[in-house]
Length: 278
Image (cartoon, rainbow, N blue to C red; front, side):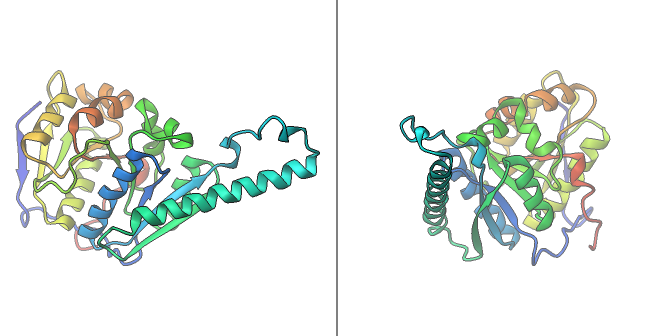
């Protein structure tokens, strides 16, 4: 891992677009990691002066089967019972969402329960709302468990229309340090550097770029993040050289598990960061 390169604000600045209608979206499923992600998303949305949307995706196909004795009912009765159970589940989630967001200091918070498959629905919501960021925990129940754990965490980021910030359960939130970004010289890393710079500019934080030229770039980035109390670490989801193998298969199990702070993944589908002055 090379030495960090600090880019002073005012020398090279990137500015996010006007974000009046661009929210931070947080995936939610009532688990402890998801609740922690809401805390991180609320901090980030407040710092960015952006609205926050806490979204639970209800996947009807992933719900538990009816109890055995009720499965013997006729088709119409089973369908009616299924609809009632699903609606109760949605209502319960709405109540949980409300209880989670009520203590948040920012009033510009919306909770939503959407129907569909978890990943496509989150992607669609982010695209339709031109979200700045998708935020998620790194482990969860139900549908999100398969999205946010291990190498499958890349599924959420792979085709996301915006950067995806993952929040480990033990993440330090709102740390006073810089935005740290890994750079291995690839186009993916360059894109991540630009998005990280745009975010750092908006947050009023210093940008620190770490060259990924060592044998263990994940450990190098994680250690630098802890030492500098970075508010988050950013990286591309693909690259070349020593950082590539780490980012393709073990971002969640490697960097996210050891960084102890939020990690922002920047996929190619997120496009380029807004140009200066946009």
